[in-house]
Length: 168
Picture 1 (cartoon, one colour):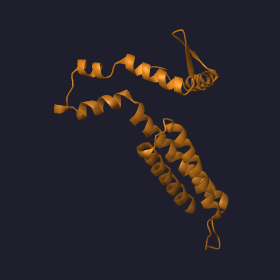
Picture 2 (picture 1 turned 30 degrees about the vertical axis):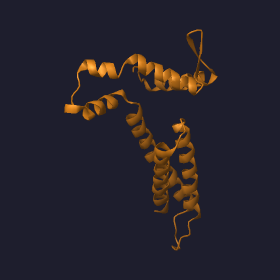
Picture 3 (picture 1 turned 90 degrees about the vertical axis):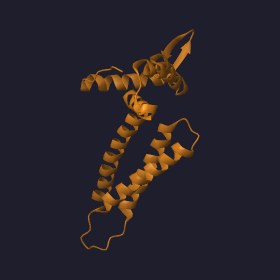
Picture 4 (picture 1 turned 135 degrees about the horizontal axis):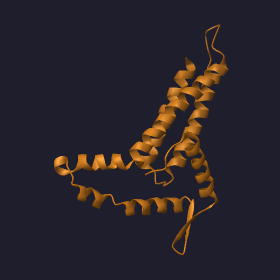
């Protein structure tokens, strides 16, 4: 039971710190902040589960409590990552929000394509990739850096293994 409690409390601390860093922080490296926060809270939650004093004579072994923290925390954090991706990166979600926030709650195709042009999206993605040092531009041509090649091999391997398409 203590493993579940520590896992949930650790995850709630991660979300609170992450949302505060998004709201009040000035960093552009949001994923790095989230990863460091998640790892720190996971270590603290697992440590709390392993050192928690128990009054029961037949208490659950500490290893089981730590395993419960790792499982609960990992499962909920994975769902949180998916949620963040959908909210932050999905063009479909951005279009839905744009329609909902417009006057009359409707937009024409031309209004949407003017607002969400693919050229702008690709330019922003390339700018982010350059900032992350995953690609470099020389004479108008983009090339993967060593970091970009590693990422491309990793993602390409997952796509091939799971049969996932690479469409936008």
